[in-house]
Length: 147
Image (cartoon, rainbow, N blue to C red):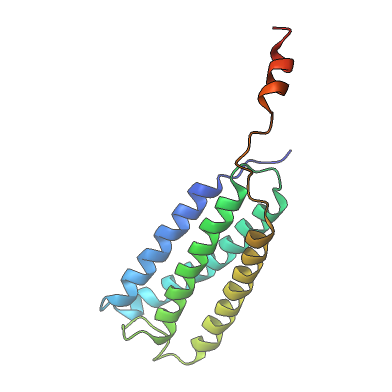
């Protein structure tokens, strides 16, 4: 039994969590309290974006699929921004004082960039809907003639 995934809501929630991380990275938060949780959140978002991309690729019959690829692409952009802030930001919760974490953030950044490339391939190959009706007026009259 296949489950229905609400891509729009899931992407919205991930965007909210990314914004929360970005806000935290701007503030003067105590790294002893927030660093581990922030790393856990980054790992979660990274994994969730991978799952959403795989599910979106597999769900070829989704209405507004191309729009969801665009939404996911924008979310990846936001995530990459948060990763950059985490790696290079002046905030107290950053990897700058913890060089061992730089490799971890660099790996996650590479995964995000790879997902973004994949999304871009799907966006560029998706068919754009035709502005012409699927059924001509004559065909519609013929179809409705017996009613």
